[in-house]
Amino acid sequence: MRAQQQDLVRLLQLAYSGERGAALAYRGHAASLRDPHERAHVLSIRAEELDHRQRVGRILHALAGRPSRILELRNICLGGAISAFCRVGGWYLPMYGAGWIERRNLAEYERAARLALDCAATAHVEELLDMAEAEWEHERYFREKAASHPFSRLLPVWQSPGPKAGVRTRLQPATPRLAVHPALAAQTQ
Ligand SMILES: [Fe+2]
Ligand SMILES: [Fe+2]
Image 1 (cartoon, rainbow, N blue to C red):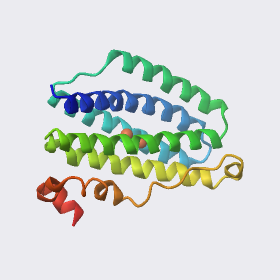
Image 2: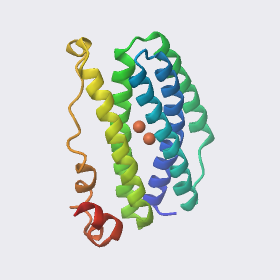
Image 3: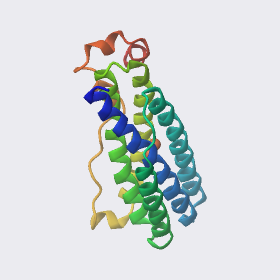
Image 4: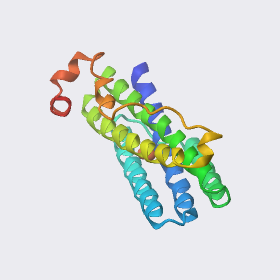
């Protein structure tokens, strides 16, 4: 297996287990929210993370990779700990923390899409970009929620990652092949 494909498989293993941890954490986060709209929104994000896990699992399988047991265990522990914290940690910190993690997830799916292009796994690029865009939406939701709270004056939120279209345009200049990839060509027009 080439080094770039190994990097991609490792990144997908992290994402696969990370989505499980996220789903666990969001269950506790949703249960901690009093506002029914917020609770429903966090549960819809949780459903998207579970869908991502399935999709990443399929890509991993197609690349002859397998989930990592150690990462699975680590993320079950981490997700469970975050879930428990959400029940006692008030409103602001879980919103802030979720947004901060989503920002990292956005960057990781963008990086996975770039690696998929670099190692000629182009069939998976569109799906990885689609998941990056979903993480962009998640990041925006939690960042805007956190920024709306007075505590954000004490613990300020980070800068926006920029417009959603950036998920695709950031990939384009470095990869002329993108322009002829039908799925992406249609999306970037
Ligand atoms: Fe996700
Ligand atoms: Fe997410």
